[in-house]
Length: 308
Ligand code: MEV
Image 1 (tube, helix red, strand yellow):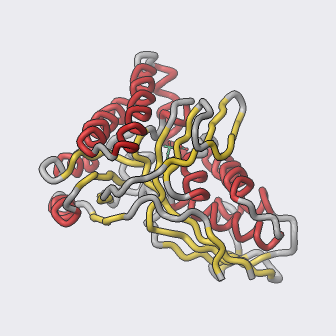
Image 2: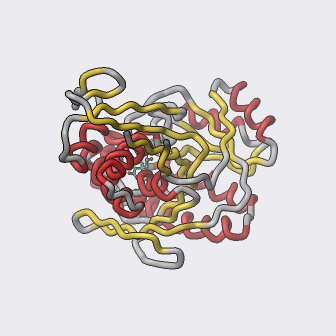
């Protein structure tokens, strides 16, 4: 039997814009998925016969990675699915990790590349941000240019993403989960449709790209007031791109008094927001009063790891 676990993530800056060639900064969190694999007489997931439509990521992971006999895969997750916290990426990375380990081929760059191919296959359009953050852990900057801390490069068609390690200082975040599940693929596609229809929205993408670079500097300085301001601006720009939700705005507004700043994280359309705070208890209480589920997360956590 081979087993692997992988973390979820929050995107601090740059979601959606990164799919269209801008940079993004993401941090691994202390919520994880564990996947184990053993050879069997039929393909099964969590005790049920595998159904490619229902088990889309695991089925695509097998197509991408596995050419051995039928296997049984079991997963365990502490990441709410459809919450914007990278649960699909963590399922993908942990499953691919278990498959590569069983084949004796598991290195982290191969894992990140294969996991991206799987997510792309299922979602039809994706950047490697979620999968590379889940594979590497800690902090990850994805950008069109190669710079300090370079880890690996992933490309698809014309698009090239350079993945970099980013040091993460001691920052405290509270996640506010709206309880509204949202699938990433259709949201990414809706942004593409909007960008095709309204060329002015390209300016929002450009500004998000600038925010990411300023955000990387602010993270290096651990400048929380600057990070908070940039988060609020990034949130407004994501609303302009049509991926907001009234509940996300309500949770972001609820954190105004106790947090440096807040924004939606991940694909949006529901899912989750994050708030940067020195007082996680007060911010959690504000999120709960506004109707969200508060989860205090640690950031900069370990990436994919083999499990016994
Ligand atoms: C989803 O967590 C992040 C998006 O930017 C999609 C992607 O990068 O693949 C919305």
